[in-house]
Length: 210
Image (tube, rainbow, N blue to C red):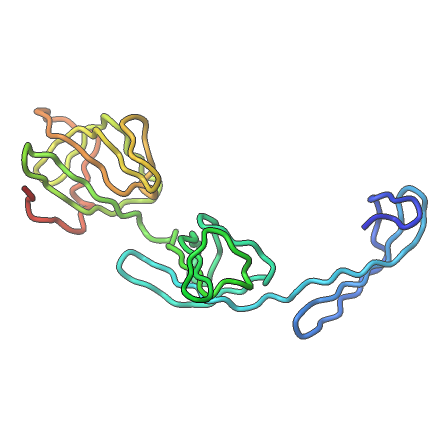
């Protein structure tokens, strides 16, 4: 909102008036330029928020609700939104014709798919038993950290973490938080001590796989 006389962007608002229309809000401003003192008017138009369909996954459960967004708002996979069910992370954007996109303007989106950031993190743990695999699903706090070379206990096994698979990659060094972990791979060790016990966090167990 540059001053029409001197072109300065510095101004103060003397008066403002908001006009509510059906599809947009119009804000009429009376401004005074800080540099030359000229008084001038500006009008800002902004579309009103609209309802967009939002499907939230909470592990096996899904919830269909609606969220208010501005039609010209840009949405990206990985963005966070605040919904009536709390904070969610966009996982996919569905456009007309069931097309999927990683980035879109809200007015072009038919359905926003998201995962809840309010529920515990769920990830798999695989123990390599030299030809067989003991497989578990665990739920922990979202910020729980697991590092490569951690010694963990789960069920009757004590094992060393050697690979962590996250949403984006597999890593053989460093750590990851449970909220981004897909699966932890570990190998048994002949220790009696361990860094933490995941047994109480087990939600499901698969039979031993060959």
